[in-house]
Image 1 (cartoon, helix red, strand yellow):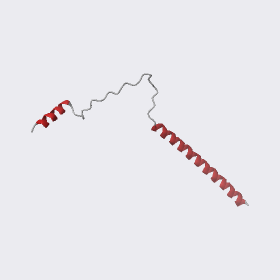
Image 2 (tube, one colour):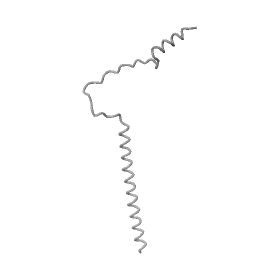
Image 3 (cartoon, helix red, strand yellow):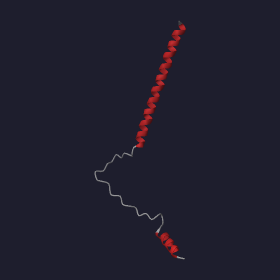
Image 4 (spheres, helix red, strand yellow):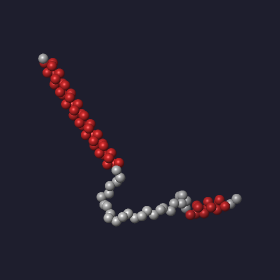
Length: 80
């Protein structure tokens, strides 16, 4: 009879421990999901202007060469 009571209490304790472990895991997963959602979004700025953003001016892309380098390459390409 005593061992049956001990077995019931052991089952109850294991079940409670299992439940607590599972709840902690769910909370940790929820925190991880919340953090991943936060970092996956575009940055949110506190200051929002009422004016529309300025139009994008295309950058004057020269392939990374300066004016002097371009002149040298053109002169070098013209020599035979």
